[in-house]
Length: 577
Ligand code: ATP
Ligand code: MG
Image 1 (cartoon, rainbow, N blue to C red):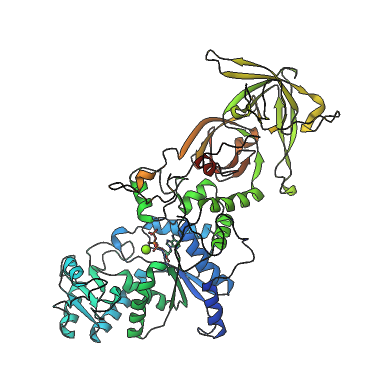
Image 2 (cartoon, rainbow, N blue to C red):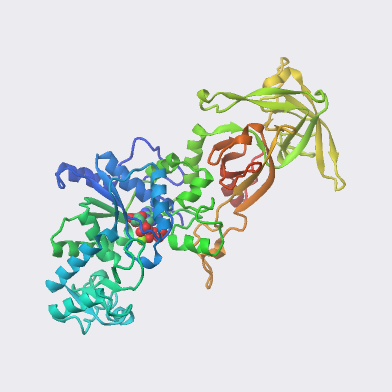
């Protein structure tokens, strides 16, 4: 079932401006009124560098940076790099690039690993206060002692070690005397707490692994739950936003802060972004990359920031989308169509219109002189008069879309068919007079005549009208290009819904990529550079892919002009104009 956030009705986006308020913004406004943090707003975005950022992170980024910006505050970028085995510099670099591309600038750049010395000192302080102990139980035994939601946990036999013994053992853990997993440091809180996170959580584990920043300095590493709240506190973060699954961890973060008597950051939880037909989990996206189900983290079908950037999405579209979905305190799911709506809306304003024919069918204008050509004026963007116009060559032989011709037209088909007249955009009215077929009986060439009185595509003096305008390119002037058409990466609305024994990859859409190797595009696109965005008239928005090479420009379809996917899925016949 698809539910939507309070800010919007299903598929009907709220206007992005002015910024709608939300409960987090209200908390900040209240804190400013009561002068809780002396008028300061300090936030942070805390990614773990174990994968590339995705559109869900964009929601968190827009919130962290957006709210601080609005109130003249500051935002830190902090890498939560407490797990050396999964973290890499490649991810750190990509995260910085993506945040910048989204249009945000961090104030401080920090790493949780910057705080390893301080975190260690605080752990010693807690041991001295009798609030932490070294436990020799195995991970399994700790789990067994933990109890359940309905049963209290059991104390570890090592729980009442003396402060001296704990200090000595912790020191030796740090010195590398013990193997991985043989001991941990635990907070001494309450094994009967109704909140499982407070049942003596592990603070440090032994892991003889090199860290991407601290190298081999440490062989004990703090757990995320021990590092996160104190990192916020060290940076004097006032409003620490995170997703709802951390709600039950908040009492633990507060416990550490109270025991240590340090700056009390306030954690506020909001709903994770879930999108239909999309998975937003770094772990699962990594699996797709590792198993070669996609070409990489930046495959244009991926919901990663680098994937959708390559596909042609704009930062503005993503920010408008995030502003529109708002935040709430319950998890739901947003329609992918809504994200696409914001992409279309933004590209409509900024993308130049061009003509491209994906599946070409030759048209010969019999009454147009052999060897002649002329240049037609074509508007670059009807939405933006300042974008000007360009010249598009016209000649006797053209290409149109195969779809724009039917030898036997179905009812209400107003495009080209024998005896029918249509407008060639910016050029002339043409009437189909005959066809040429191959051995298999397929139409391979359409013959037409044109009316010179309709130059520019204007209505002729006799007031004759046509019901359809189609796009075209001049056969001799057109440039070959590769076009990649994408559909949803998953064919199920919730890709996690699988039959027994299957995993989410069973829901991959086998038709998510359609490569058209020999499309024909107008000559102005010969010099199109990677990242340039266009509207191919009547077809959709396209972006020049980084796989382009001289002589072989590759275009990714960013988004179709209309939501063809939903139509196909509902099995409604496509509207024919
Ligand atoms: P993933 O499940 O994709 O691995 P994560 O929560 O482990 O995500 P982090 O790197 O820890 O990823 O996330 C950094 C920040 O982004 C956190 O504050 C987290 O709450 C937020 N975040 C992650 N995924 C989403 C999402 N889908 N929607 C909103 N915020 C998210
Ligand atoms: Mg995480």
